[in-house]
Each structure stands twice: as C-alpha cells, then as structure tokens.
Length: 459
Image (cartoon, rainbow, N blue to C red; front, side, top):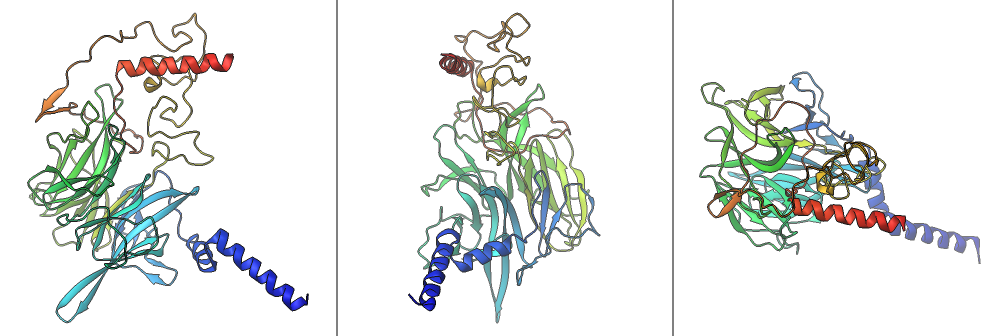
C-alpha cells in the first residue's frame, strides 16, 4: 500500500474516533471552548441582570463590582439574560442561562429566546424564555411566556414550532417561574409553574391540572426548607412573590401522608409601598431556610436583593446592582442537593436517609451522627454496649412502634404539617429534594434491615 493510502486510512480512523467519542469535530471544539466559561463556585449565590451575572454571595454594595459573567462569550453577546441555574454533568458544574432578544418589525415586536450552556447557544426557537430550573432528574427546564409552554431542554437543538419536539406541558397562562421536586407518594416528578394567578402541577406525562390559586399575580417561585420547633431541618415549603400586594407568600406542598396537597398560603414577608418607594419583589431563591428576593425600585434604577427567614422582616442583603432589570437568582448546590459530587461526597440523598447521613457520608451505627432515617435514636461514635448508647444505636427511650402518631391538622380534606418555627440566621443546608417525615414504624424497619445486613456481613 502506498504511503498516500496509509495516510488516508489513518486520517479516516482519527476522524471516526473523534466522532465516536467526541460527538464530531464541531462538538468537541465547542465543548473545549465552553470550558473557558467562568466556573461557578459551590455555595455561591448569583444574580442575573440583563447584561451580566453577579456573584452576590457576600452581599453589600455591588455598584463597583465586576460581573462574574459580563454577557460576552465566544463571539456571542447576551444582553437580555433572564434566569440562571447550575447542574452537575459528568463530574463538572454546568451553567444554563435564558436570554431574550427583542426583534422589531415596524410597529411589531417579537422575542427570540435562547438557552445557553456554558455561554454557548444550546436550545433555540422560543419566544420569551423566562423561568429556568435545573432538575437533577430531567435536566434544564424552562417556561415560555409567549407559547404558555414548559420545555425540557436537555437536548441541544431547535425547539421552534415544526421542530418535532414535544413540550412537557402546554396551555399555561403566562408561566413565569418553574420549580421541580419529586412526589414521594407516587415517585413522579412534579413541575410547578407560576401563572397569572394559578399554580400548576405537571407530571412528566404532560397532564395539566390546577394546583392552587392565590388570587393575584404570581411571578417568582422557589422551595425553601423550614426548621422545626427544635431548630432542626423541617419539611420543604413553596414560596411565591406577588407583585401587586408586594408580598412573599409560602405554603406546604406535601401533607403528612406524603401526598401533594397545597395548604393555606401564609405571609412570609411584606414590602409596604410607603416603605419601599413603590417598588416590588420579583424573583426568589431558597437556600436552606433562607429565601433571597430580588427587588425593583419603582423607576428600575436601583435593584436590590433582600434576605428573608420566617418570623423576620426583610433584610437588605445586596444593593447597587446594575440599572437594568434583575432576572433570576441561582444558587450552586453542594452536599445536600441530591447529586453525588465525584471525589467530594460518598453519597447524597438530600438529607438523612437509611443509607446516607445529611453530611453526605454513609450512615453507620457508631459514626457519631444520629440518623433517624436510618433507625438510630442515639450514636455516641462507638459500638460499645455498656455506655449511654447501645451498640445498635437505639436508646432505651425509643417509642413503642404500636403507638399511634398524633393526628395532623386538616384543611380542605388535606392533612398538612404545622407552620414552621422562626428560623435563625445560621447557615443552613442547601435546598434539595423533598423527603417525607418517617414514622416510628419506618425507623424500626430500617433498623431491622441494618441488623440483617450486619449479621450477613459477619457471617
């Protein structure tokens, strides 16, 4: 064979391998390019302005701070950014941002929406792509105000009418925000989207149902974790902003039987017009038991972020942000987000589970961490049987499994948990997936499983 022929075969093999393992030369080049996008930092909070994204983790005056991302990347200029979310993909954090560009033809203005992934155009063909969330189960999900649809944009490509792609849900009334969370009772993912005055529950098969009405204009939505009266982590609740009333409302989303059941709306924070110069709250981001709220001044020349916890007045957190509309807030999760981070976590079940501690270490009797979900009622860091905590991590004060639990509060046919106690200002775990409260029977069953596993190992 001639040297020229050998060269052609070698070039063909190199090209084939590039397509097999890199998705083609273009995809590989694009992925390499996206690696130059600024890396988000776990535990940091970001605010989206029209022309830049700001790291506001430390709060304070942002007037002279440089943006974390200035809207210019890889030959693209983004000056209509709306929302942001972060997701762990193949061992690295990936940033998704929605961007809206107005296009004027005579007296008519239309909007072209795009979703970027690490600064590179990822999903196109939308109208006003506003709300964005990164689901650990489904991937990035957006709302389109113009079409009234919710889309899963895990795959790159064109999503315009005629593209052949199918939305997760249609027929929503001006959907602004979207949050996701699993329903422990059915094992399905529920997508809750804010509309004019409604919330919708959207299972993955696309069925649209009225979830709960609040009787006013909803914009922002988020989940935040309440604290129980003992100061420990409580259930997750849903928070929403109402622009007309200038309030942040919250309600339970799971009842004590682990069933989706909206409870009564409660006031989380108020922004009276006379105190806040006619401005209004907009987007939300829950971080543990704290809810961060973006706030517009009446003339849109001063944008701020407030920090709110149950039982406290809104506290100014960051101010002096650019004189352009603030979009969404994004928090980079770490331990407790339900996604195992390679080389950093042994496990991550978004809180205590039968196999994983809330600190993302494997649950084991004798590890010094009391894990109620694993059936422990004590754990003194050893397996000695003659001290205060027996070697099975069950204290003598364990409740009889036959004792019936106290009756929960009922409202409209739902059994709802009681309102959360006021939370402190201490750091709280990141929001994650929703986990039901386990009863005494669940504790005993989990303990029996662990005993059986221990005896099998020893045998």
